[in-house]
Length: 378
Ligand SMILES: *Cc1c(COP(=O)(O)O)cnc(C)c1O
Image (cartoon, rainbow, N blue to C red; front, side, top):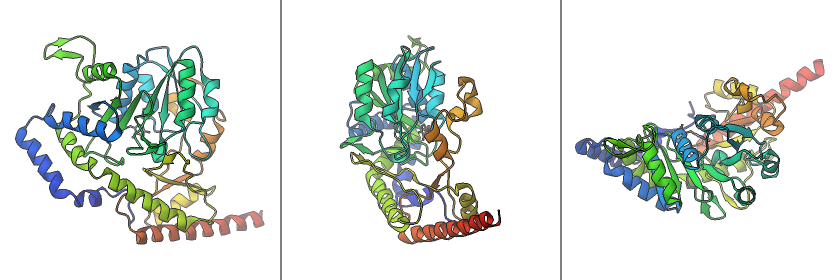
């Protein structure tokens, strides 16, 4: 069985370091505000190239904190795409704001900057830009629009730890960057965790208070906050894994290159990387019209694949109330039926990739043959 992601393999290489860190936190027994949390914040913001970091309980809480710190509230509108993980949109709902969707580019699957201005109204206060699959959206065009209309730019970097846009790290380009450390992300904890980063000191102070019940000190609370704290165990684990992030991203890029070479001219639409981008391949996503049948065949033959994501958010039952219909976002809807994520993780071998690609090609040849047979019979 070819796994989709192999965390055991990733952790095996650094097992003794990880266990040492876990033992240290165990000995210190300062589980909620241990020193690893501040150290993680310091080390991570240095890596990203910004001034302040607020480690928190998940990527979803990171997005919620960012929206709160940007002052987004009930009745405001926040622009994002329907082609993302639902958490991006849930965070908008959590502050009582209205998600306003903009379609994606057919090439990068990120927000299409050419369509943003049409979606801006008097109520628009922010854009959540999702750097999907490991590649940054076109930030220059987005920032120009944001400046023109005086709206905030929040980067959802849950899939793009270490990705570069014009040489700058994802999360350092907009007003605030939100990261998830869900185990399967490019930088993952051993449980839920996240972080928000920014150059704005006031925002970081505000978010630190919101993260911990709006506390001034133990018994004084000056704003209504949340319990969005990170565990000391997760912070200690992430500090170790951060040291290997670049190396692991390079392994992902090498695997993506091998996939590209082996899949070229085979009829699939392959990932398109923008000139100004360094893509960190959280996911390796290709497209085919025979997607549903291909997924079934690959699973049957022991290859775990994914679909990120099969139902655009505007067509989810949870967001029916927004009133969007089928056809509202043609690119997002079209690619949702065609995308397939192949196994991708640091440490996959060339042999793994050759086996996967052979099975992908063989399955798609068989599917094409049987569909053309059906067509002839019809
Ligand atoms: C994973 C993910 C999130 C949510 O992160 P959690 O840590 O699971 O809360 C948000 N946005 C995107 C694009 C993601 O991939």
